[in-house]
Length: 124
Length: 348
Image (cartoon, rainbow over all chains, first blue to last red; front, side):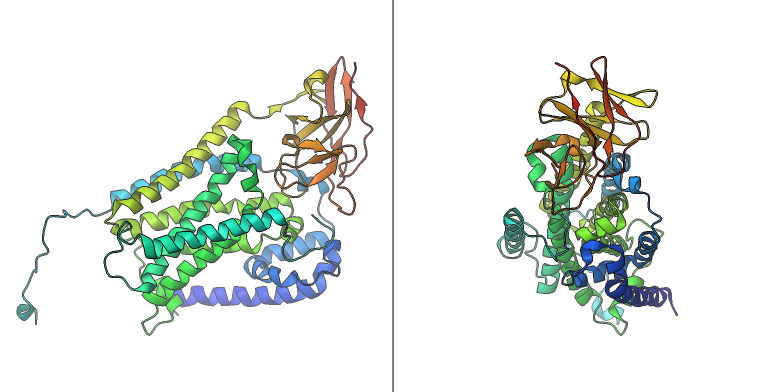
């Protein structure tokens, strides 16, 4: 098995486990942890892609809510400082990446006509 | 808002926003594909598959660029706040456009070998040790995964389920995705670009995003909310007369949280500055019909108890408040969300 095959196998297993989590969570688990979901069924299929992608996080949050390990104050801590880091680091990264791209870009003089390096007969 | 989840919370403003967005995307694709081939260097014969891939790729880049400009613009100038209102729909549509781009690429460049096309995408170029000829597809795959996660977790359920801080951390990956898209383009199509119109549009767009974010952050550093002075557990906010009717004064508490002290009908109340919905800055909103209204998405709370009006169920923490020698002081410990606090009269 090469690396590409291995990565695709990981993706398939990730999706399969996610599908299982989605099935149980959307049919049994959700009603017990969120009163707003009680009797609301039409929106649930919309959640399937999200569960497939981040099912470990879903399991963790499901556990926190089911066993009430959350502290209410944690819901009200805006991550403004995180944003500040991104706001300064992202511009630097953008400039560096563009500069890197331009530095390896090959420029060919437009006035030079294409030249055949060897005759077709010679290469056969 | 809460009550019962529905698939999409439409209202007139969102219909208009989405309709305009759809028209703009259609117009962009039409212009790219049919009107301006010579401007964008498409006069060379390329097949429709490649042409479509480029059109959707350029559209996704432009949409992402606009999305990332909205946040800093709204912080720099409040007149841009309406654009923030329905940004999530914008993001979901961008993810669909990006998937279409990826689909055209996969079904052309990787579809005609004996290998599975997804495997071919991963092993076709593995020159990770060099900059020239770097497998730029990897950056595109990473950005696409980020966009898919953001789109798939955009429903309000996710915000409540994951909590706004966790949700916002996940959605901060949009910045990584954008840098990855810039790398994807810089090491990809930019290497082969003969016509400089595209180069100028691409670099101009990316630098606009970079510049706006840096400027907005620098401005917030200069003029942002201040840390309140602690006096035996009570935090000094300001002189009572400094708070205008219907508006708030925001201060940072020693634990890093923000409190908003509102004045309503000559009385003061203190609530958390973070909206329960997306942690929007409530203190930058105003009181409408006795309710504090979040400037981001219009969620409302009674300033006296931090509760949304029935039938909605959102709650935010409140703070005890007192006036000492004409100075407003807030206790540093928040009350549990929805706790009523008696308003304090502003001295005449």
